[in-house]
Amino acid sequence: MLEKMIKNETAKKAAALDRWMAKHDSANPFPSDVTLTPDIDYIGDGAGCHMTDIYRQSGAEGKLPVLIDIHGGFLLGRKEANRLFAADMCRRGFVVFCPEYPLVPDTDIFGIFHALTDCINRIGEIAESYGGDTSQIYLCGDSAGAHICVYLAAMQRNADVAGAA
Image (cartoon, rainbow, N blue to C red; front, top):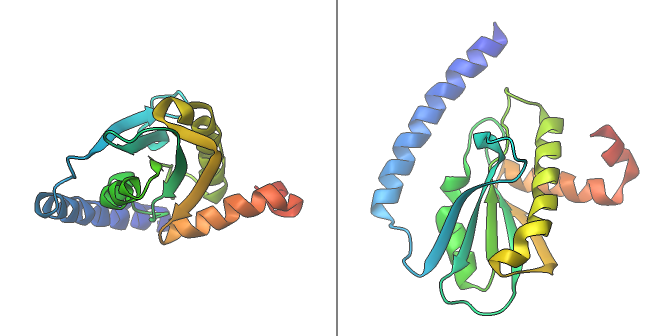
């Protein structure tokens, strides 16, 4: 019963988010000086929750630091909500990757950690082909995405945290 209620409420919130994003996107056009490469599959299974968008300022030269921006949500959210933030960070000198990840209740926090760990590893493999400097990879996130970044970083330094995942 609880799971059904969560799924129903999440579907309602997703519809509201879709309406908000359509209104927001029409009022805030995507900048013409940023190149977006959408939906690069980071696991290879074709699932929408395993795609990343890549942003780079048009005409930028040389290798740029890589920023991986984890969107908020946990239960509800999507990478496209951060497109203007990603474009702004491109203008500040980064190649930006915005991954999608599986959300609760379709997975649990450990499924999110595993998917995003795979994503970060894949970005390390492909970043140079998009002009990224793999010696400079940074994580950032908003809301739940920020919390996920903290846990992903802790998993790299703390065996107990990594073991729990």
